[in-house]
Amino acid sequence: MELLLFITGMIVAFVGTLAGSGGLIGMPVMLLLGIPVHTSIATAKFSNIISSSSSFVYLLKDRKVTYRECLPILPLALAGGILGAFLADKINPAVLEWLAFFFLLFALLLSLLKGIQPERKKGKYTLPFGKLFLISSYDGLFGPGQATLLMYTHLRHGLTYLKTVALTRFQTFVSCLGAFTMYWSNGHVEWMTALPFALGALIGAQLSVRLASKVSIKQAGILLNIITFILILQVGMRLFL
Image (tube, rainbow, N blue to C red; front, side, top):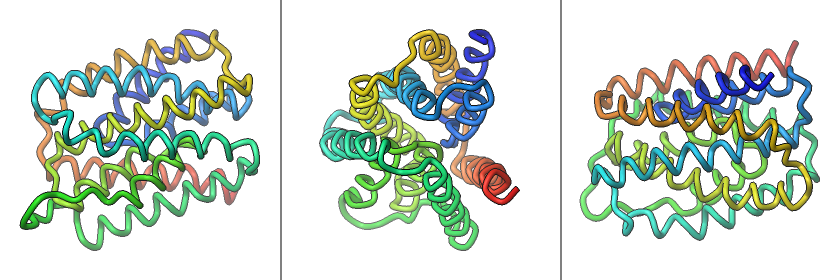
């Protein structure tokens, strides 16, 4: 089982870094392996801490983003992750899957109707704090689809693809760190599951972040749409069949 978790973690991080929503690949695999849902979520949070921080540091060193651009995100991502994890034990997992389905459907429809070509706006980029906090709360609560929603949000507000990847990786790291602390304190962490999954995620993230510089904004849009459409089909089948 450890080898399967390692391979899954690598695929999840590779896809998740480039287009988001890797969690909707990893979560069903863990559930099919008989891992309890809260342990699966905790495992995903731990692997995201490792993979997102490593890819963020790479992009930071490559000067695709600065600390100053990231710092305003820190408190809302941390608060959102903690809040989401706190609520996780109080909400039926089936309800969370419905939320994921409609969030992803909305993101896909928005992209298809308006496209994700950056809208070049005059003046300084203003972070959409409300949207980012809600997405981080969802990340702590469940998670799959969170990175895709963040990427749509930043791209629609005019950021470049690489800066979008960097900010998404940073926010994912912070929200997952806050959420994982809650899951760990509530006894949902199983290290024999979390460690091989996280090791695969680390390798997958490093591979994908090196590929990201070769991806154009048009290619990113196509990739986001394809991944989102596949994920909507996957979640929809779980809900309706």
